[in-house]
Length: 354
Image (cartoon, rainbow, N blue to C red; front, side):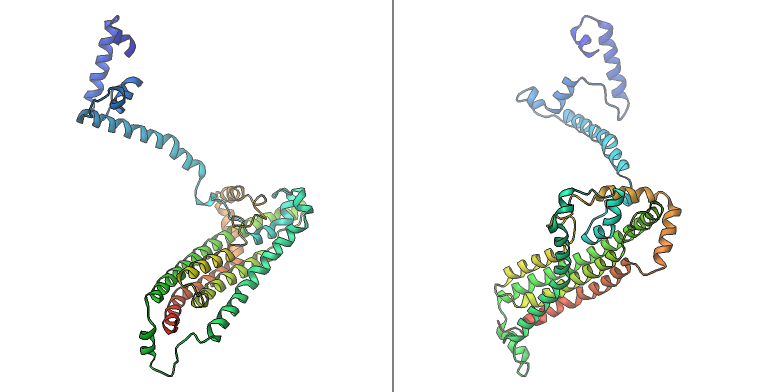
């Protein structure tokens, strides 16, 4: 219609286009129809007409056109994607070494997990998994023994029989203040992140237990090996011990660091790697092609749409001691350490001679 009217050969088209523009402009908030060329010129006058400055009228019109396009995109794409993703119950279930081992026999027998031939015959796969458990269980203990022995075996602290306040003032320095600031910030960050990890593990373990109850019923019906929940108990114990142990190791590790703030930062990153060692999304890739967190999250999301089933499974879970109860106690201990460890670190650094 616009092209025909612009040619001037059909006056009725020109009159009709003029009526459309006039009527649309008379209604507040309604934009008149514009051809792509007209709209392109309105949005980019500096391209279509070199040297043409922006005017108040074109700027307002450009803003209305841009707002209209953004809202159309939001309604057509963003809201559609949000509705397709579902609620928080559909979120992916994070995998770990212990959750995989709890479901391994049932997962391979039922087809829940893919069973590649190379890893089934590879002797290093199972040995690598067991080695991760040993490192997480013994690593914090060995590190704590080493750090505390080093901290008290050498002449690091001031003499408690003398004027302690005078000794602290004598050995205070700018580098020591930097060590205190960096150490306190990293201790707080580590403890807060630990609380977040434990809270996430608690919620994930509840979802895992509910799915395990469903898988156990299906295994009993189909004659398959049921999920082994003992691995979930072991995982909660080892993860809680490793996280709390790493937090406690940071205090003496920061004290014996000879390079000051640089060693403190590197020690904190190394301890973070240790307690994330069993995660599927961690640095080790033993289970990256075995655990499908999105599929399991969709399973639980579909199950959450049946509230009677979820309520019944919750009653069964709360009637006994389950792995998520271990995480609850670990959260209480970690909350206490969030206050105790920074204070202990500051006091110990002030009592150090160097």
